[in-house]
Image (cartoon, rainbow, N blue to C red):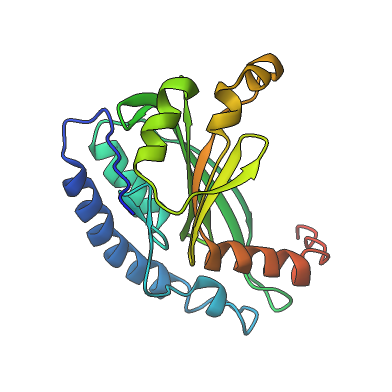
Length: 214
């Protein structure tokens, strides 16, 4: 499987990937040290763990990379990152649940411009998606880079190579039906280990109310 990604940046993508990796190591260590004094649920370490092997998401980003490492590398490449965060800090009743989303507009993938969105679970990159401005131009370029594509019908398809999953709706968006419905074309890359851990947190701890402020 060969996924190629380019961005509107003066720096080579290889530099961006290396910068993310190095920053991730340093920042993960600092984050771990800062959390040692926090009284927390006994499963907190498992919900913050970095697991190997990591998988490449959109060819540049690695699953489990940290928010700070990726934001710093993107901004150093001249890109603007819009952030959104929802967080429930750890306590004795549940592990941490921090969901962060980064949005980068006017990003280029396979020579097509669009919007890049990166999703994190507990400071670990979980999912990357790209939303091309021109799905009709983008769709055939993407399909040529992939192998073992499984057609799900209605203009959707996926590639499963666990723990990596790639899913797309760009074929629907470029179709006559999709254009009539105003469907948005999206291709996403997921690390299924983090997706499953997030879902496990929601199933086991989502019912616990947020503590009232002191």
